[in-house]
Structure formats: structure tokens, C-alpha cells
Length: 344
Image (cartoon, rainbow, N blue to C red):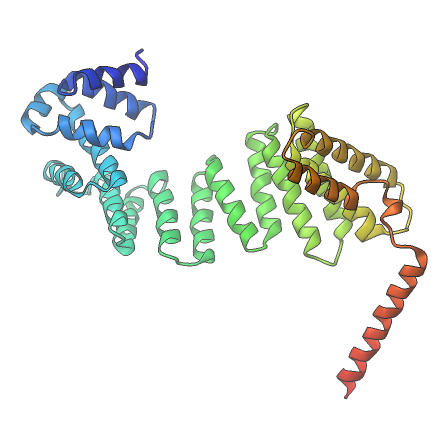
């Protein structure tokens, strides 16, 4: 089978050859390549003479019209868009029930014009015929987000999409990030856990789970240590899955998590987990030193400051006992002052 480069070169050598243009456009369709300018240029040439195009391309001429219409929307070629839309409406318009593919294309044209309500109506019509039409469901999400309907509306649209297309990884990830942006960390974590079922060895899913657990722990005052421990597990797993390759983002997360467990949660209290926590913190520090060994001096200096503030041994980072006493006294005094003001 000829490659895209070969077919593109053949068309450039003979830009008026309809069989060569048809072969190039078919390859772009079947391999789902995003070459909008190429499609618009050569599709326009192929469809310049509709009768000749129909004779040479046969039934494929309608696929070329559809493909060229979408490319015209991408490159903002209004005359080409209108010509393709008119030809498709003349051939497939007026059907009862309406053609789902034509309705979807009409929705795309409405989106390009910024007519969000008209686009939504088109997609709702498609979904009325086929509630499992994933393309229409995805376009609904895009329209809801583009028209500024708000985060809750976007989350509702994405939830509807994942309920129907449960194997759509992109939908699950988009829903997870929407929940994370709304500080709904438990919902975001659920979505990423679903993603790990698709690919349990994907280190970036593990790293993101670590980040979400860390953010959840940092944003709450109750049961922080179990959340930090979960974050530590996922950061460590991300490092393990990537093996000897540098993974500074996961290493930084592991370093900060181990530091938070000891410095922010436990303090001077001893715990059977302290040895493991320090070992993982040291591992993260060594990974970061290796990752930043041959980078710009400024970045290396930033990494050294991070390690100085968070790397084991933690004893040097814990406040001295007299400092702890002063801090506790200060907090107590501040509380008394606040209570006095409240009573007045």
C-alpha cells in the first residue's frame, strides 16, 4: 500500500489527475489523517467539474464532498464550504428520517458560524434517532463548552457521554479533569481509576492519580495521612512503570508527598512507616538529581532548593522543640484574642 508521502508527491506531480487525487483523499480518510489544507486544495480541484467527478469517482464522490466540506470548515474557505454543503443537501436533503451524517455536517457548519443553539438542535435530532451516536454526543460536549454554558453543564454532558460510550478514554479523561477543576477530587479519582482498567501499565494515569490524591490531602484537614499515603503509592508506581527513564514530575510528587507525611502530618511523632517514607523520599531525591544533572544551571539551582527543603533526612527540617513551644504558644494567644473579640 502506498504511503501518504508517495501519494501526495504523485498528486503534486500531476495535480489534475482525479484518480491520483481520489487515492490520496481515500488514504487520508481511512487513516484518519488531519491534512485539512491538502484536502481542501485537492478536493476543490476534484469537485470543480461535478459531472466529471461523479463519472470518475463513482459513489465515492459523496465521501469526497463530505471530506472536503469538513476541510473547508477547518481552513475557513466559505465558498468551498457552501458548494459542498449545497451538493450534499441536493442529494441527501429531505429524507425522512433525516440523514444522520448530513445532520452532523449541518451541525458542524452551525458551529463554525457560532450558532450554538442550531448546532445543538442538529445533534439532538441525531441522538433522537440513535442515542448511542458517539460523534453527536462528543459534538454536544464541544458546543456546551464553546458557548460558555458553565462547568456543571460540561460535566453533565461528559457524564452522559461516558455513560453511553464507556470505552471512550478521552471522554473519561476530560470528565476527570473537569471534576478536578471543580475541586471534586474523589470524582476525578474515580474517572482515572476507570482509565487504569483500560491500561494498568500507563504511568501517566498513575502519576495523575498521585497528583489528585496529593491535592485532595492538601486541601482538607481531616484524614490527610491516608490520602497522602495513596498519593505516595501512585507516584512510586509511576516511577516503577517508567523504569530507568527520567520521570521528574512523578519524582517531584513523591518527594513532596513523603515530605508532607513527615513534616506536616507526623512531625516528631514516630511511626512504623517512617523508615519506608524516608527511603521513598530519598529515592525521589536521587531521581531528581539524575534528571536535572545536565540541564540549564537555573533549573538545576531550582531543583537543589527543592531538595534542600524537602529531601530526607527529615530531622534537619523539623522545627526544634523550643520553636515548637513558641509556635504553640503563639497559636494559643491568637485563639484567646479571637475568642475575646467574638465575646465582645
